[in-house]
Each structure stands twice: as structure tokens, then as C-alpha cells.
Picture 1 (cartoon, rainbow, N blue to C red):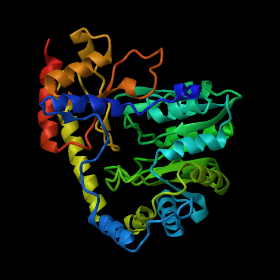
Picture 2 (picture 1 turned 90 degrees about the vertical axis):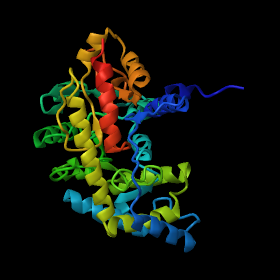
Picture 3 (picture 1 turned 120 degrees about the vertical axis):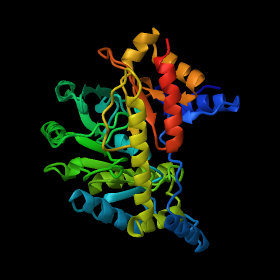
Length: 398
């Protein structure tokens, strides 16, 4: 028997591989400080749990429309539109079993084999994986580190566009580097998309994980509403990563195509979970507000702990629950050539588990600096302090 060759083009979410490594180390009796995975060890708000149980008891356990139930599509249209200053209706929404399915279905809807799609690198590894699995050309654009954080290399992005380019994936409030576009940078992305008549996938998984001020979406800029699909997820704001529910939100015609893909993939997203998400969007928000406050405290503790380490100097991001420190000086001090050596050494000598830049897209030939990614969403503040104290000792040792 044979296997399909196209699976060779399918990547993976490599943070899960680091999770397996951390579990193996913990199984040997070690206390692991899990900075590797962006999971959230906080409870889903009680009103959402109650609404879910009620939905099950009310018998909402069968099939439902592939595009999602009307009350949820309506609630999403109002919530997402109002927070971005645009107008959506239920027909602009296709409910998904999580945020991730929007990536593959968007690509299936706009890209033919051989077409090119621009994507952020470093970035969420499923972008690269899905483009290549569907026989497209994944064309990376990169970031430049500044004193206050990271900026998109707009010149490189422009120079990467060809006659085959059909779409651009844009992740403001970015995983893994927590990059946030200025108004000028976001307008620059919009100008590029409009000038080159590109579709845009705006990955807004962290749109509501913003600790200070207001969030911004590219869809609110002139000319972007009719060419942009928003990736929406309930996972982050409501601490429900394992529930698997989200949405694709955009122009009606592409949403019809995405809904058709729903029929072929999963038939529908779980009915009783969808019904409970109406409560998540329209009900008491004190639970989600408390989640955000806890994450903010964890961010501050992680930034403080990292900046106590000689060789690391990191700014405080306004968004996401990731930090992406430059560890080039530490690599040089230890005589390491590969980030894998640093990662493994940290686990074995400090019990701290983290991902590296190499888990977020293929490194480019012009990269000379080394980075690691720490997620603080799944680790309590006192463990953050203790773990980073251990990491400091290891990083500063000869």
C-alpha cells in the first residue's frame, strides 16, 4: 500500500512537539515551567459553562447549518463589526471549529496551484504549511527589530510581489513576536493590497488580548472591507482553547465558498457550543475581563524576569501573551550554533521549556540574530518568577 505524496508538503504546529518533549521531562520527576505553548490555564467564564450545559440539556446535540446557527452568526456580525467600525450581517459569517480552519479554507477559496501567497515569517507555522500543502508558493515577508519592538519590512514585502501573487496573510498582534502595527504600517499593508488587487487574510486571534488602549483592524481602512477575511476565535478571550469554535468573517461571496468547504470538512461546528457562544458575546463580560487582567499581570512578571537576565533587553508589548527575546549574546557566550542546543539545555538545567524562532516558519538566509518565544498564558505568576530565576542562572553560567 502507498501513502499520498502531498502529505510531504504538510507541516505541523511545532509547539506541540515541544510540549511532548516537556511532558517527557516531567515524567522523569522534574517540575517543568511551561513557557512553550500558548494555552491558558484559567477557567472558562461560568456564564458560558452554564449556557453550554443548558444547551446540552435543551437537546441541541444534533446537526445544524454548515455555515453556523443564525443567532451566533448574527451576534458575531454585530460584535466584530461594531468593534472595528464596519457593518457586517449574518451572511458575512461562517462559523468554524476553531480559528485555524479559516486559514486553510481561505487559501482554498482564493489560491490555485502555483499561485503565490505572502505570509509573515516568523509567524504562525500553519500559514506556510497550508499554502504549500495546497500546492501554492509560500512567499515570506519579515520583520525588523527596533527598540520598541518589531516592524514589518514593507520594502521587502513590496519587492516580493509578482504576477502570481494572489493574497497576503496579515497578523497584527502577532504570534510569536507580539508585533503591533502602527497606523502608518497598517496603512502601508492596505495600500499594497489595494495596489496589487490582493485578498487579505487578517488573522485577528489576539484582537481582544490588548492590555491598554484600543485594538485596530485593517478591515476598517478604506478599500479593505471587500477584500479582507477576518480569522476570529473564541479561544483566547474566553480561555477556551480546547472548545474549538471560531469564525470566518468577510465578503458574502467568499464566505459562501468557505461555508461550502465546511460541508465537506466537518459538516458543522458543535451545535450546543455554538448556542453557548451567543452568551459569550452578549452576556456578562466580567469573566473575560478578569482573564485579561490576569494575563496582564503575567506579562509584567515575565518581562521583569527576562530583563533581569544579562544579555536580554526586551520591551513590554501591548498585546498577545508572547515574548520574543533576542538571545544572540547568550548563544555566543555559551558557544552554541543552534537554538536547539539552548532550548534543550534550558530544559535540562533550569526546567524551563520554551519554543525558538525555528518553530515559526523556515528561517530565512539573511537572518543573523537568534530568538526564543515564551508564552506566559499557561503559567502562574509565582512559577513565572521561579522559572525565570532558574533560567537566569543557566543563561548566565559558562
